Length: 197
Image 1: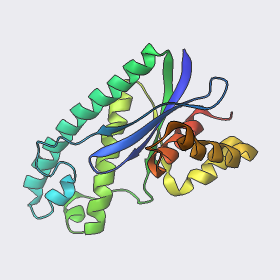
Image 2: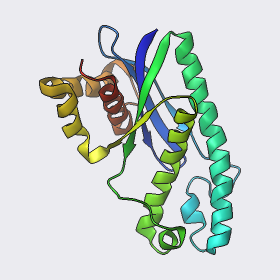
Image 3: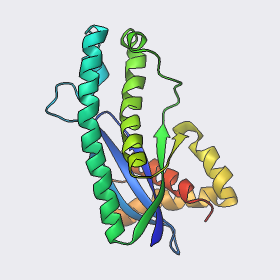
Image 4: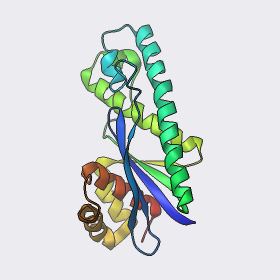
């Protein structure tokens, strides 16, 4: 089995993931977008925005409903990915989750009183669900702050950090779209999980 790692960059209701491996040379093994919000549930893509005007009790109920549905979708998407990689003889040794720069998310009442906190809470909502899906099948998830990614790359890859970043950014020419900032950052984060090359 060849060793691989997954990088995730999440958004409201969906996320980009890239699987990297270094068997010989650095390669993109897989990349895809996953849907992590059940569209049949009103407001599921932005659940905290949806409950902003509700009381805390009703908001808690709706968020729990969204969370349960998102967990099912995400678990299925992650398991499908791992099964496909297993068939191709890749073993995922870890995952990286790109994080926003914000701090700890406060209580629900405090979140609903602040539009900025609503955005932060939604980001954490979907990242938490993906982390749980990975950890449920034994894949450790390492959080990495986006703004610290380049510094972390220097720590892990040393003098090769800039060369590796250019290589990852250039994969888009070979692979074609999409190879946006989502995929580039997820690929770099996954590469850091694999360690020094």
